[in-house]
Length: 154
Image (cartoon, rainbow, N blue to C red):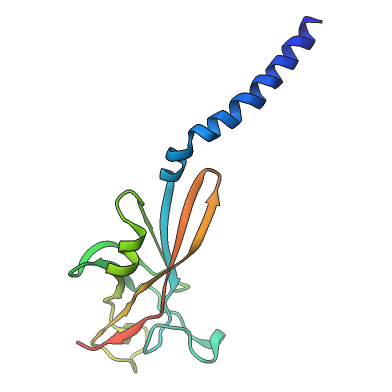
């Protein structure tokens, strides 16, 4: 009989305690997050996917920088063999609104590196766009992508 009560009160305690713990994470839960900037860089004059889509070559080993304000580099990543880059930022250090209005992605690696017929001077630049959140357990990830790269001649 005592075992029955022990099991009953254990289940009752768990049913009450766990929702309270989750509710108490309210403010902290919002702080447990990341901002992720990611995209694919293509080996084209504007760094975007071409008209023919799947036949567009990617731009591997390109340095992609996140620059804010007057060109201050706050993060960087190198594209992989598939042209993919990803940067993770602490939302306590960066406000989403500031990232979207005051920062841009800059590719300093010359386009001629991936295709000799493309310009060897100039940089690819893109503004940023927020596309939503992904919840991973109690971790909230804000997803940001480039709006579209364009060649800026030097």
